Image: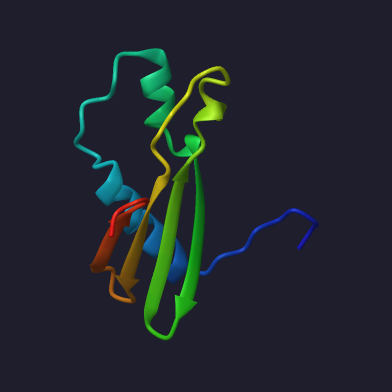
Amino acid sequence: MLKGDVSIDGSAFKAIRVAMEDLKPRNRTPPADKIEACLDDESAYDFQVQKRGNLYFVSIVTIPERCDPTGVYMDGGVRYVISADGHILLKRYDGQR
């Protein structure tokens, strides 16, 4: 791999996809506002996935500056625990106990 390349296996990708589809369902109505539409796109997020045994820990963090460098936003992100077969076992928003 070249410097800066990222490689994830298919199961980790599936865990990210399951989490993103939960956060942003495919059948949702797209926002009309330009900034909201940008924030609705996957490119406005950073993703992290860690595998521990048969579980995947997925973190999805909104990076609002990618859409609106002058805005102030409170949304931080969400964390998931997803089983190897693609079931969401836990979902927790930043700041949630």
